Length: 259
Ligand SMILES: Nc1ncnc2c1ncn2[C@@H]1O[C@H](COP(=O)(O)OP(=O)(O)OP(=O)(O)O)[C@@H](O)[C@H]1O
Ligand SMILES: [Mg+2]
Image (cartoon, rainbow, N blue to C red; front, side, top):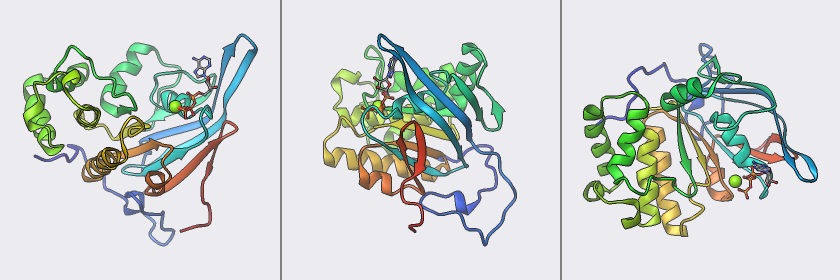
């Protein structure tokens, strides 16, 4: 089966995974899959307001792979939730595929999110009462798709991640690595142009984490899906085309000046 998007835009190779933008190869301007301008977020706590995101401006191009590291409590999850429309910024604008989505209602966000963004979480977040296949088809249904056609695609993807024989198993009958494989398929089933992954290997041992990361990179690269990866793992982060650090509520390039 093919994971290619049905509406492929001309790919700019400078946005491909692990490739740095090449100033020598200008190409037509493209609409970023995600664009954030001046995001800010504070939380109300018993001790007063806690500023977490101070001023984040970020643009992610089609097929690009960006990683975000930062200390525990730096605000990485908060930022990813805001980028995915699961939480709201206090200030700033958020665009998905050039469309302004910040300030829009929850119903609008849910509809857009279903087709524009796939999420992968550290703790998998599968529905425990649903089988692997049903968890994936639920995401397809939320996107308004006919589950009949989505089913063939889901089974093909399950096969691709090595779980062809596990489609009817419940999450409780699967290992952590297998649950995360199901979650990868769920994130990709609606062919979103962007995956937001928050510590996708954080609950897994080293070898399984490496397997999941390889699958995530392979699947997103094959389908030209952009990936924003939050990770504490320096090796995984280093594989990204752009590597950010979140510190003091601000994103900075981790190794500006290095190849
Ligand atoms: N809903 C909330 N209400 C109050 N404070 C919150 C809320 N959500 C997050 N915080 C606080 O915001 C800060 C950033 O949290 P966040 O989970 O984004 O950090 P993180 O960088 O993802 O950390 P980790 O690496 O441990 O996952 C923390 O101090 C956290 O306690
Ligand atoms: Mg976190």
